[in-house]
Structure formats: structure tokens, C-alpha cells
Length: 100
Image (cartoon, rainbow, N blue to C red; front, side, top):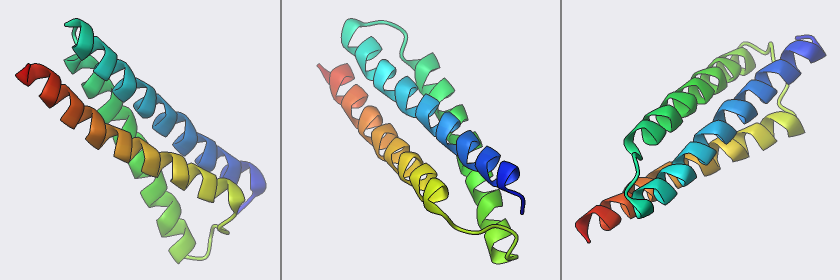
């Protein structure tokens, strides 16, 4: 696989996962102030889903030996993993805020 395609895949994962993280954190703040957090959670979930799909495609390419695992992909996976954790925490925190 050429270097540009590899970088594009990694940066797409980073971009979508970063957007998801931001949306989840903004949703917590919105819930704290009584603002609309549901649309932020949806936007975050949509971005997370896109990042996950691209990551899945990258793993398939790796299985077919079309993609070399490198530091950039590991970085993208770390951001994707942290977005997943923040999503789960945001849902729990918002649930607790709603119970108040």
C-alpha cells in the first residue's frame, strides 16, 4: 500500500475519533447546563461509527497484508479507544445528571 493511502486511513480515524471525543465531552457540559445534549451524543456516535468502520477496513487490509502496521496507525487506534471510553463515561455521567 502506498504511503499516502496509509496516512489517509490513519488521519481519517484520528479525525473522526477526535470529533467523537469532542462531541461526547460537549454533551456532558450541555447536560450540566440543561442544554440539548442528545444531538451531541448522536453526532459523537455517528463520528465514532465512521472511525470504527475505517479502522475495521484497515484491519482487513492488514489481514490481507496490504497495510503495514506502524506508529501512526497505533496512534489512531489509541485515539479511537479513548473515544470509546469517553463515550461510555459520558453516557454514565449524563444519566447521573438526569437523576438529580
